[in-house]
Image 1: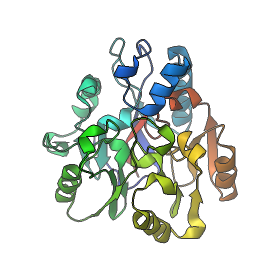
Image 2: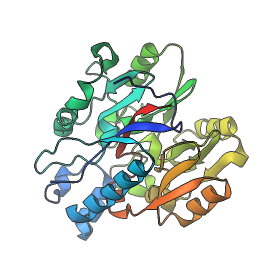
Image 3: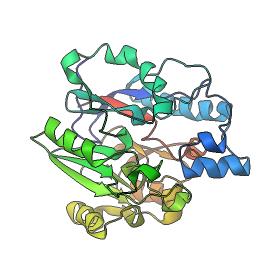
Length: 303
């Protein structure tokens, strides 16, 4: 397979979509990786496997409607394999295998059959000290936007997934691009104050538009850089509650077509006013794990 990813929105041709099959029992609080999952475990509202399977199959149907080749992970019994974006990402013709939480390493094995179809020189494993997850990495033509956290207390945050070592390594891998890091707000306990990944508070859409949530960024000038880069008139600013519900974590099939959650009424209305075709799906159960449409898809080939 010849990989090709230049940005977030060009016409999608091939993608890995995670799976909720054999997702395993509800985790304990100690086993959870993020504050939103913990909140739902405590409340007894953690999503059920059957509901999540239904939600993901609806996304698979939309992708197939647009003639996108959809790859799925091999099923590992009683194992969460929903968030395909975390474990790897593609830039240009290279796939970078993420160094993710040790508890999740088996997820990588489940898509090995896809990697085997990619030439070896284009499969990159970063050094162990480089922590990175795909939700923090956004190729945008001449830029690569990366969410990070560089505080001295990095190790204290299970929600801090991408470090500066990874930012530097990615810059070295793609010297012809400008790598732009953004410091994200982290919390282990309060999901409304936690930007788990960059795509939890920002996403480019179309040719020149973006969804943004100001409070997801630790440094106001970095947020302002994005507003200036896209132009204030092209930015849809989401509220704290909308960020919590993952409004920025939609997924582009093309510059014109976006898959979005059906409850994102304000966003979906705006998208249609901007001329986008919005394919609405139910994904609110998946969202309870602090991830949504972008998190569960990993593009391999775009035009």
